[in-house]
Length: 302
Image 1: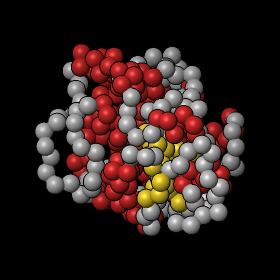
Image 2: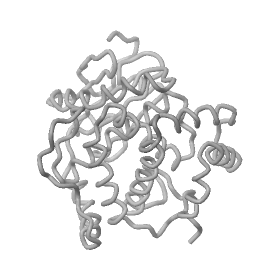
Image 3: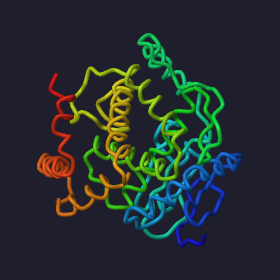
């Protein structure tokens, strides 16, 4: 893949070209890059057939040394970069959203989830079984029952952010963008027939709900990844939003129907921050899916 982008300052990410999902990686991360590329590729293929995606969704698998040179985020959580920085990370030209993925997960990050797993266990909810599964329709993260599996599954959610943004479905309402990303992810998994992966995502969502903290139910407080909510509260929100996303894409005959209807409904909504924009988006959302009206009651004021 040729590009007019300047080289990254202080880091060299090696290319792993692919016509659908190009990737770049730090030294020593080629195998992980190839595995995640194989996971995301079929998802992006079916999403491109269903949604009006324009641009490139890319992956950058970055080791800790390169991460410190390139980003201010703490090492460990996947996230997306768009605009000029996303294109530069991917070595691409034109509209690009790059999913940035750590080459591994540091112990300190894994330990942060120990209280969440303990709280879920005390509520009788445990991670999905580590029993070997049968043949899968997709090269998904290995079932381990370990929180690292959840982190790898989150890579697909971040790809959902990239695909949705490239399809014009980034609405700049934080909780809704999270929901749309997960809905895109689950719709693609359903399209490729990866029911085993969906089952594990939903099982982890149950752990997140049971182990998280639901003391802040105000959707307006939901800011991710940087915001006013602590990790247990964010984890609870993600579990709830995952379950809701599956309700939207898991039962209709066309898993993409909700996303396509929403895309059409928000086409006339003026972009921008602020209460007026959020109100316009909420009205469009309820018009597309009236079940959101009672669903909002889950997030009634404290």
